[in-house]
Each structure stands twice: as C-alpha cells, then as structure tokens.
Length: 72
Picture (cartoon, rainbow, N blue to C red):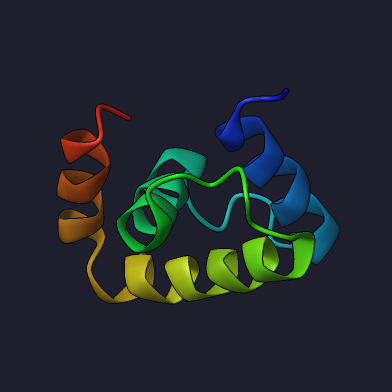
C-alpha cells in the first residue's frame, strides 16, 4: 500500500489543491481524529483532508507540533 502522505498528495491533486499544505501536516490531523487510517472510505478520507486544510490554515504552528507528535 502507498504511504498516506503519497495518497494525500494524489487526493490533493485530484481536488485541485496541490501545494495547499504539507501532506505530513494533513496526516497529523487525520491521525488525531482516527488513529488508524486504513478503514476510511475514499469520501471520508477526502472530507477529512478538507477539514485538515482548514485546521492548518487556522493554526500552522500547532499543526506542525501535531505532525511532530506523530513523528511525521
């Protein structure tokens, strides 16, 4: 299976949001909500990416700290 950050990059590209945020920051927010991401369906995964982008925009420093807490 592809790494989550690569999958996030691909999903961002399909959303027309390339470069909107670092995939590692997005993964941090997804892991905060779900822990394990394997069971997410495509729509939920995409919805959570959009939510993560909003969270990153509001708190970039906190998002970096979150990613680091997951060793991302």
